[in-house]
Image (cartoon, rainbow, N blue to C red; front, side):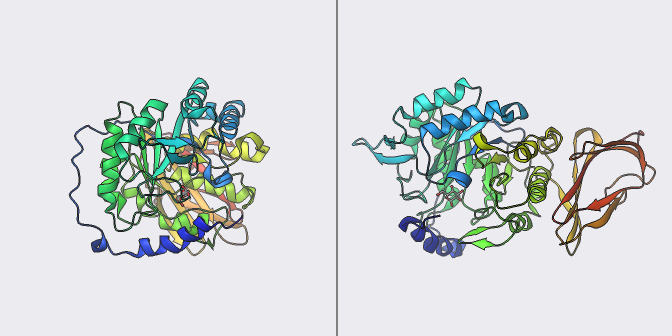
Length: 406
Ligand code: GLA
């Protein structure tokens, strides 16, 4: 990808900002949020966002295509709902300070585009930033929060992703609270997706202020590694091991968007990525080109059984209950006494793995039904443990349903 000047600027700036100690932030008085937070996300949100695949190459043509594809591919029927335009849709402000979409890329305007997305039975989202500029160097919302929120409401926006570039020493809680207040007073129910990369303890204030909050810097489409300030899928996973503490209905830690289908990982690795994000009760925000999905990408992203784990109404995220080098066991309690289990093998060779009932917190004499969520195989009367050969970089994932009353 072409490195543009603004990207370079952001690369240089972001580590500096992230490195600022908490006391270097401006002293502040956090606004009081009078209106209650609209309870819009009882389960983790599902949708699509333009950034991972298209970066700044966004247009109304692309967004219409993706909305069409979300319906035609079965993604909508699988539960995906929000179509979110990330950075670079903005161009300038008019003489009155109103934010303007890029007229060349969005000639029909945002209202018409939102109407189109809504006509497909979907919801519509936009991106802005708490600084003077977005990470892409477009106008941010600093000083225009109420004006922007009213504009979003007029256009029919249902989701705002709110980023953290060019915010200098601003206090994050205060900055996000201003936008939360503006959105709540806009007259429309709008999800607030906090994106300050986990730099100012968003788990402390994020649940009151927004609906989801990013916990890390950006993901990139790789099993592991580092590229600029982006890190690979397993690196992101490792930074989210303890966030089960903060997850729950209408308050979701966000380990960043999915890379499934973008080509940088194997099919097995994408299955692991999707399974683990579902275990984390993560927002499932696809980041691929839905109009050009191959069969594996569609199969992974629309796996109803794995999605049901993500969307479980109990809203309790998984814990990693065992880690032996490359081998991990993750478990997630589900509504009604079911348990989701993932055996995860980060190693270079297939390994026979097992998780016994003690590890899964099941009574020693429990008889269960197991459903393998990738092969679909169902076994009844299973006792003692689940086990199997886990491919390199792969998972085995089951839903366990107790057969005997406990
Ligand atoms: C930051 C965010 C990304 C994306 C880009 C857009 O890096 O963390 O998710 O929104 O900005 O420039």
